Amino acid sequence: TTVTTGFCKTRVFFSVVRDLLEGASKPVYDYPDSQESLNAIRERRSLSDDVVLKSLDHLTSIVTRKVSLIGSKILLIENSRIR
Image 1 (cartoon, rainbow, N blue to C red):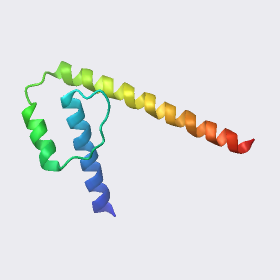
Image 2: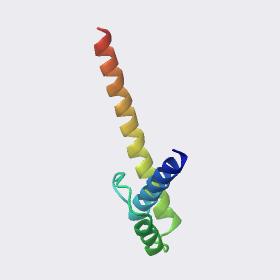
Image 3: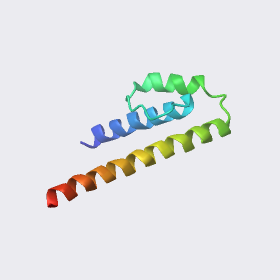
């Protein structure tokens, strides 16, 4: 339903924001509690924009790499089915 979809999107958003602020080496996708996420955001209000942007660049490159690997694996599976 629309409410469930919105709730899931909110939890994913909080997870991504928390990963950014914590400087995670890779996305965690643990779908934290909303209150827990808001507390983590409040605790890191003093982070500089540069730190957040570097974290964003790093996580973006990790996700981009993973998505291309997943795409390659899907193509390999499809190719093996054709043969």
